[in-house]
Image (cartoon, rainbow, N blue to C red; front, side, top):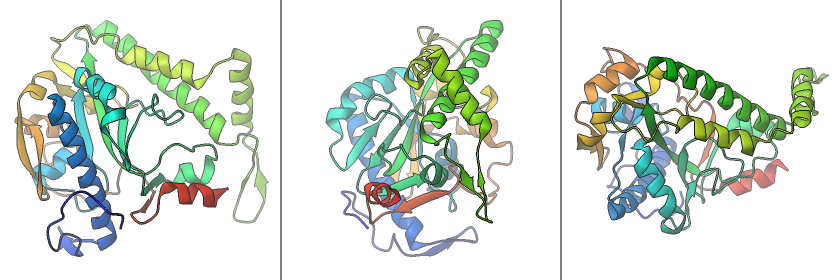
Length: 317
């Protein structure tokens, strides 16, 4: 495993069984890298007085397991857009190698709508992107996710219009990125060795060429759309509008971001909603305290705590 700044408790990396699930040393090493990222993230946020809290599976893990969900491999952080943008301004100079603050502004082509803090000496590559996207040379070290939460306007008509438009723009910019990276003219080969061509992607490629649509332009339109009501700061809800999910899954109570408490997360502490119960029920239902073994939402990941992602990208050429 690469050298980390965080001090790990004795025995932390040992394999163990949690909730009937075997947590291997390999997974523990990934957790260690992510906890190191969290500690560095916390340092910068504390320096500038920025609020953040655990969200999603990290919030569930903190409340139910006092740490990671045993079968999970990621760490999710939520911030109001105002704090997120303030962090965005100072992050490029505050996070020194191997830490890397990744947004579309700092790493072109990585567009995801949110930020990721990565360890550049490690590897955290999404398998399907590694196998099919040949031009994604952006930083792909192990990461934690930082999601900005934007205003959910109380006007139902305007909200419905915004929701429809943001979903269309998200689909469009990801589609254009896919056409850039996915070799729309390159065949895929089945198990018999037969080559196949994706005619739909080839047609879409020429469609966007004719329309002169670039992913950067569409991505900017997407960000402008999801932040268009952020001047309104008294709405009941905020939401992670950069995610292509229904509002029921991504909205949180605005007031809860101002009512936080520290909870145990492995051997660290992490801010969490005081009223975590209503947020977890929105996300996972009334029985969220009952563990259900599922795969990470990231899907297949190539995780390596010994080698930099650059080694894998070079190997792929």
